[in-house]
Length: 98
Image 1: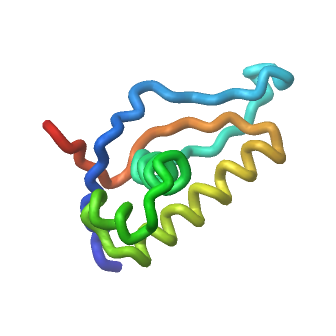
Image 2 (image 1 turned 180 degrees about the vertical axis):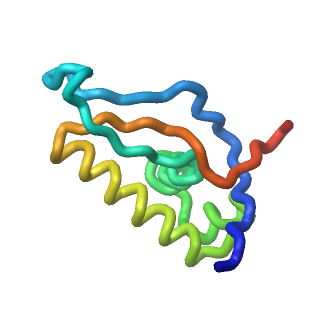
């Protein structure tokens, strides 16, 4: 398998964890949203950029952006539907401006 290309991200998520209030912490299952998934969602859904613009900012191919966004949407939907915690961490990223 070919190694993953570095994804460049601008928005460092810091410590981000989203939990449903109705489920006790001990009983929570979770999903991990990688930093590159977080950045792709931020750019595409929050900043309303086209996937080609997201790809340019992250310095990856547009088809990779599409796969990243699809994966992120699936994880977020799973967390919402099944009352799971979402943690943002990890991924193959470098931060712009460092």
